[in-house]
Image (cartoon, rainbow, N blue to C red; front, side):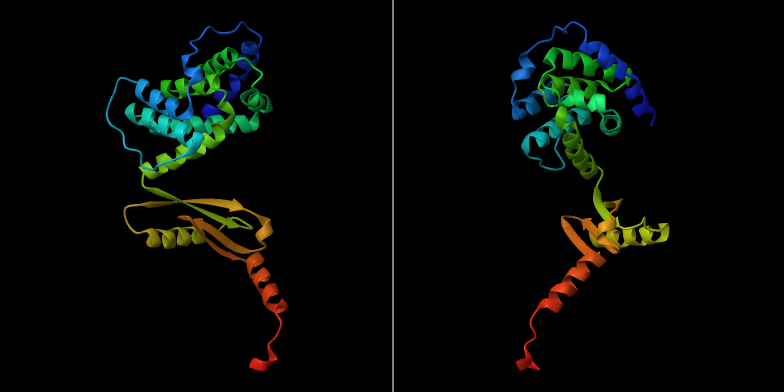
Length: 243
């Protein structure tokens, strides 16, 4: 992705920031709890004060951060852009051990972390909503949770679009016609008003067949599970009296 490339091109700025003088920044945000951050960030991100109703109730620290970002992005009408930026940032973390280590290293002073992530976000041309969010995460020492926060944020944006995620696990990729048939079947299950978003994962350990994780339910039709069931059946003692 072009955006991911811009993030990687900004990594030299990280090294520069780590060796430069600390950036003088206000410390008021650094003492906020997760819930306090959620309320403050969502209400101070912009001047647009339209009321926002979350499509899902998320809990825990990462849920609070994701909810705050969703509210801010909704108010600024940039949810899709923020989503794309977070996904590219997570991808950049996977490809750059240096960047990944930086987000996890709490020995780096907060001021330096904030300056570095701000320069990287500027280089990547991130939206102001994402940029401010990352700077506050850096100040609070929460950049190490960006992958989890992104996953929770995606739960909100998918719910906002009326999408339901279905993960299908197979040994080899499904042929297009089988993928289409499975998607149509799942779509029939959830009915109109929502849209199935199918994600394929490859796992040779299931030996064959498929496993579908869908709507908080798991349909396990793998050869591995069938073999385990057969093994349990064969190990059960035979009651000859019932014959």
